[in-house]
Image (cartoon, rainbow, N blue to C red; front, side):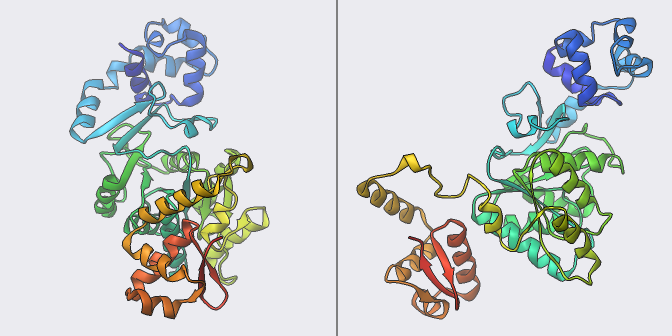
Length: 373
């Protein structure tokens, strides 16, 4: 048995999580060595009682390792353990990182520019609009959107990110062979094509009330920032928010209407110190990963700056180049930009937002736009 196989098996044994794994490794040094220990040795370890010791000793009675590997292979699922280089470094920072990650799709680089967008399952029209706005903005700014594939805000955030051509990761509260809710299976398929659907649970693990809070710690753990769009005072989104604070993540909340129950949780978070957030730039301003960010010591010559600007222009889409060409002569109102570029209203607005997120242009009062200096 390899150490990697041992970790997958330990992850499949009920009752073993991060804390008990650390206790076992502190005694036996390697995951494979755990399965060479006697019952007495296992029972003597702090946090490992007789019940868990019996499960480890007789693991083949409850764990079908070969079946698990076959299910994963047939489902196109890659299992990443803590020993593997692909395991996200950002997730190792939390106090109880998962033992394994089951991944369907391609896991983006989550060590920078990742934001969790979470909120109420029973969202309002305002909440839907805000979730879409923030997810689109994140995608345009090249941030990965993390959420939980649940009804409401989660699903809207995933879909909006996909619609904007971004990358998104859905974290499940059950195994990848039991996607929940089943109505979101088509959405999960789309996410796999532009990101990943992941879980710490074995393939056929059923979602439950206990598994969703564990899911939430991964949603926040994979993110530099956690944004709550709408939440009741007892919603799961507030659990994610509290976990985010414990994990030392930046916490943001979107204000809502004072008489709406979906706004109560966000207002409570703001009162307790979460940053009141109106645009995605509020999040980007707190991050050292701002597009175009450079340290004072990395000043460039005029020639280098000119070459870099030209390269950035060439990298822009055709629609973006049309707008930049119009704004090259100075600031311009949106109506005039529309006439000169001949772009449809929807394409114009989304392209302007993309350029704002890329820090290429900025909006002035009166819906005028100008190139950033």
